[in-house]
Amino acid sequence: MSTTSEKDNATQPVITTDALTMHFRRCEALTDVDLTIRPGTVFALLGENGAGKTTMIRILTGFQQPTSGSCTVCGIDPQREPQAVRKRIGYVSDAPALYDWMTVAQIGGFTASFYDDQFLPVYQSMIRRYEIQPEQKIRFLSKGQRAKVALSLALAHDPSLLIMDEPTSGLDPKVRRSFLESMIDRAATGRTVFLSSHQISEVERVADTIAILHHGRIRLMGDLNEIRESIHQVVIDTDDPLRAIAKLGEPAEILMEETQGRSRQLYIQNLDNGMIDALKSTPGVTDVRCRLATLEEIFVACTTASPELEPTA
Ligand SMILES: Nc1ncnc2c1ncn2[C@@H]1O[C@H](COP(=O)(O)OP(=O)(O)OP(=O)(O)O)[C@@H](O)[C@H]1O
Image (tube, rainbow, N blue to C red):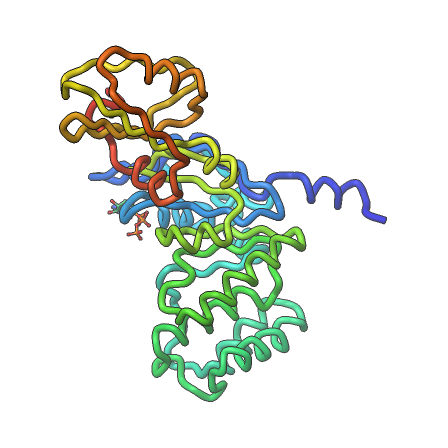
């Protein structure tokens, strides 16, 4: 029977951030990021290059002090107790720093000294499965082989939280597929996976919760299926490019708007049938077509600011 504290652990958020902000001298890498990630989730942080994903991961793993705001990882503050956080989690950085002069076997033995007895046999079996020679020097491994060693080191202590920055870059399609499937299996057993990516198709396959980061701000966050079912692409044809279109009321939110001649394309969250009818009956509107947006379109809509929708400072 599980104890009260085990039950608490199973429901307590694994990661929380509260108004997390990181401003470098010339760049606002993160601004007011609020996140809550529950156990048993595969969470994907999506964002284009420079959106702030690595900065976020560096703060969560205690390698970077935020400018303001706070966060917890497995209930621990990574700014106060970075070592305690790193011992609890598995972490794969976007450029794994491995000791080049060691062999694959030696780096496993070295890392095993920080964990319990289970680490080494699990590491060795993963290395075998990846068909990497244990006696090979790290310096002579290919990029993909290095990624596999880094993954094996991060996973061998069976962490309850795995944090990965672009985990599949460098992996071949076969390994990529089995790796992604293993992430789903981890979540099914109550463990949590946090990954950053700009590979939309991969995220669609594995993630159940996503956040889209744009210029350091969360543009959209939530259950992936709910997000996909709540955002529509609407194309409105008019008889005149300057024709005004009926304003959509609450709770609809326009994520992106583009005009091409007499055709206007909008990505709208929380659209309802009444709004479509209102658009259709707007004078001068000749046709309205509406369908659910793909995740790729949602990503583009959230990371391409329409000038008229840019928040004013
Ligand atoms: N130490 C630093 N000093 C100054 N600026 C930094 C520093 N680290 C990151 N930045 C800036 O912060 C922004 C976010 O960088 P970050 O590496 O977090 O992006 P990312 O989303 O991981 O991008 P990518 O997908 O290209 O890896 C970028 O504009 C980057 O130049």
